[in-house]
Image (tube, rainbow, N blue to C red):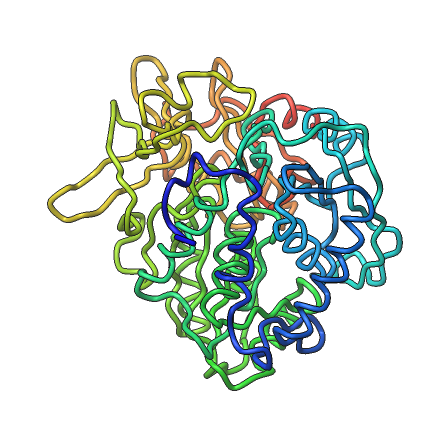
Length: 464
């Protein structure tokens, strides 16, 4: 079987890749650590058990299944078992409400749903023990050749349904193997990012299984538990997370010495400069950046922290700048049930990110969301600049800046006394036309399931 080829035209039932690409290492090699070590032989047994249960529920090659499991061995084994059968798998974040789950199932129409029946572990647990139920659902077989269906984060509006074929996933795994700075065989990934979403799924789980990089999931997503996971083993470790996790780790006054820690790699939004500097100063390691999308996976990286906020395109990725927007070469649309040419057209995927391409240096500079570039009285304002400036003020814990006939800011304060000084502090740092017309102090800002701040204006107004 060719592991890279006609990725966008293969049948869903091309299932042999699970054993060939993901499970072909030594049986006694520990590949996962979720409270206790799991070697490949044990993982294969777990997969076989789930495969039998899914088959008994009626799942067949070309069928469809939705997984709505929390991070666990049950989630990993169920995912790989469904792919082994040759089914199309829809991944639903376990943190969604029942109302959101019901709406997603209505859109996705799977034939089988795997959901938690009993969960052992608290709300802050990064992984849990799960007894899952496997139930038939009145859905339909796969209508497309995709192996995995994911929903976009929904940070700027309704989620999009995105499909990726097995060949497309394999091609991304191969991109990882060609990038300098990724973990290598015998090393560890301490994963903070969700395995339901692309960074944790491919960059953590699938690449790790393929490359012999052990995947460690901390017991809890707390500073103490994350640092304990790094320190628990002498082998080199890379932390993979999102900006929220960097802010969490950078908040520690005096972290312990961690000679095992090689670097932390972040995906998602741009990390504010002061947060990045604080992390590097406290931990003494590289803070790498990874830029990607659910639709593509990893697009480019700056894993050695040399080019911030620029990245170097990953092997095989073609990037161009069109009218100030970054676009990615993609032969077929990744969207299901969406025919919006503003998202994909003529072999190019619109990222909706502002940026520029320096072909000579081989770098792409990301400037933030394209819709963060607004005009105020004929003058251009970058809302990302306003947001980062506001977030850096004393007493500000987090903030979102949006535009709706004028610039508005929603702010969470770590020090309530700062409320009275925000406008004066901003006046020293930003020109008058860049400053928010209104600043709303709120108790909490809405976030997506992956920790991204939501910038949908309707959702933000509900916080006031």
